[in-house]
Structure formats: structure tokens, C-alpha cells
Amino acid sequence: MKSNRIYEAIHAHVAEHRTVYIFTSILFLIGVVFGAIVVNSLNVTQRHDLFTYVSQFFSEMDNGFVASSSELFVHSFLHYGKYFGFMWILGISIIGLPVIFVLLFIKGLVVGFTVGFLVNQMGAQGFLLAFVAVLPQNIILVPAFIIVGTASVAFCLKMIKQTFAKGMNEPIFPQFLRYSLLVLCVGAFVTIASFFEAYISPVLMRMIVGSF
Image (cartoon, rainbow, N blue to C red):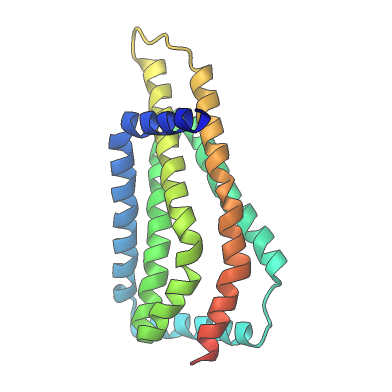
């Protein structure tokens, strides 16, 4: 019975904000494509410098000269937690709407650039590295960013309507609680993503790098 109520609540949320979900998903994908395009716009010197830095990082990883998994976990958790927290704050501010869109675009751009650069410079090996270094945590993070981004945009739009539209007397506090609870629940998945990034991805990356 409880699971049915949760399913109904999720279904109602998605149905209510379907348009926003589509827009934020497309915006993220545009960021991914743009990030891949940026790779091709780099000149030879920029590619060489960046590839030298990446190669040095892989060499240090292969030799064990990187931060411990626990340190990586804390760093990742705090980084993504701050990102989600910032989006939550933007959602309760009327002027935060365009910044939310920018953050979603940047997240897509980073993913697209990272994958595009590794594949562009290292071919099939780069694809394998991108697969083990980027994919595991982003299976969780990408939907989480889109959900939180959509919730933030939707609540921001409600705040704007409540402020400027005449005849809008719907209580905002219950909606604020639902919005905050959703962000908190989705943000909890940051723990899982950080675990993948700190404990699983480095092991897989060492296996790939060691086979070069």
C-alpha cells in the first residue's frame, strides 16, 4: 500500500512537470554535445598540454600516488552535496532560474568534454577509460541532477507566479516542504555515486591503465 502511494506520488510529480523534465533533459544533452564539440575546437598545443596532464595523472594512479579512497569519497560527497545544495537555494530565489539552467548545461558540458577528449586522444582505450571513470557514478548523478534541476525550476516558477500573478493564494510552505524533501531524498543518492567514484572507478581505471 505504501509503495503504491509512493509510485502514485512519483507519477503525479513527473506528469505535472513533464514539460520541465523534457526541457532540462534536452538542455543537459545539448551540454554533452557542446562539450564534445569543444574538444575538436582545441588547438594542437592545448590538446598536448591537457593530454600530458591526464597522462601524468594516470601514471600517478597506476603507481598508487593518489589520494586514498576515503579522501576521494569525502571530496566527491562534499562536491556533489554543495552542487545540489546550491541548486536548492537557487530554486527558492526568484532570480535563480537562469543559473539553474547554466548549471545543468555545465554538467552536461563536463561529461561531454571528458568523454570526447579521452576518445579523441586515446581511441578505444580512451573509450574504455571513459566507460569506467565516467559512467558508473553518472548513471546515478545525471538523473539526480535532472530531477533536482527540474524540481528547482518548478519551485522557482511557482515562486514567480506567487509573487507576480494576481489571484495566486496557494500556500507556498507545503510546496516548499515537498520541494526540500525531494531534493534531500535525491541528494541521498550522492552517497552511492561518491562510493562508486571513490572505491570502484579507481580500481577499474587502474586495470585499464595497467593494460596499456
